[in-house]
Image (cartoon, rainbow, N blue to C red; front, side, top):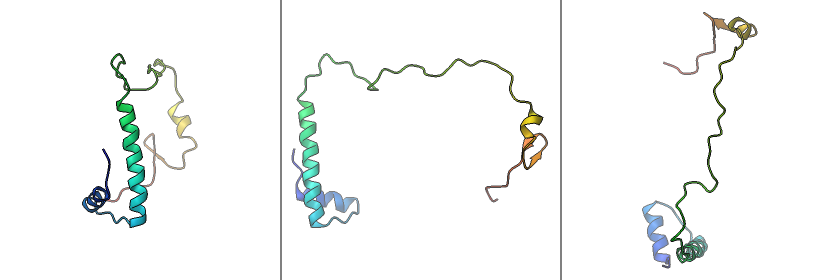
Length: 96
């Protein structure tokens, strides 16, 4: 399948893009190279190849959750510039 100048202008019109004639020739060549590459890929025999989602084997990379003591609330809030009722107080970001 080859892309023509008419195809490029049609897609540009539908997507509301302005493509100059010198750009159009470059785009035409690039798109035709991509289609040629895809045609080459389609010629490869993949009958005994399992479909994959990822190129590399995936495994759970998360560590196991372990309950351990954490920092005391008062110690965590000791250097906070603003605090209120045991929480960090920050300036309002969203306006009502």
